[in-house]
Image 1 (cartoon, helix red, strand yellow):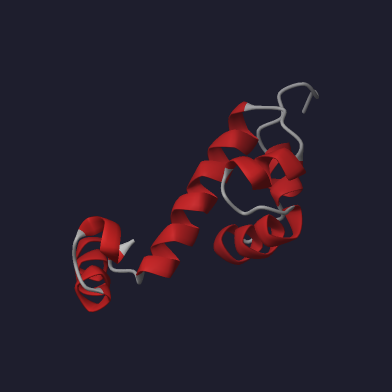
Image 2 (image 1 turned 90 degrees about the vertical axis):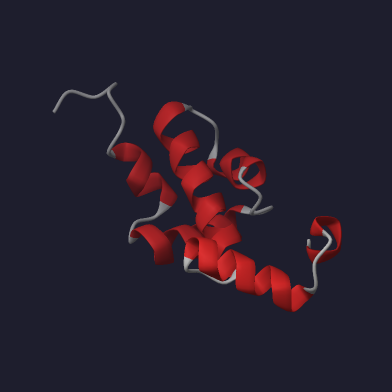
Amino acid sequence: MAEEAGVSVTGLHRHVRSATGLSPGAWLIAERVRHARGLLEETTLSIDAVARASGFGEAVNLRKHFGRAVGLSPTAYRLRFDTSTAR
């Protein structure tokens, strides 16, 4: 990423941290979780498809990072937005 941005790795870390308060790696995971949340709220894609579409590759990676960030599994999170069942 640093090379593509035309800055040093240290410069990239410094810039991302000052802009977001997070390391580049933590920022990337947060953005992937944010994208996954949107997909879980608005689509019926499988958890595997959500994992791939949000950059986690495999569902196990989505579950790990999503659970840490949100405190729920992707499936439990999706159920909060399921309007097909009466409550």
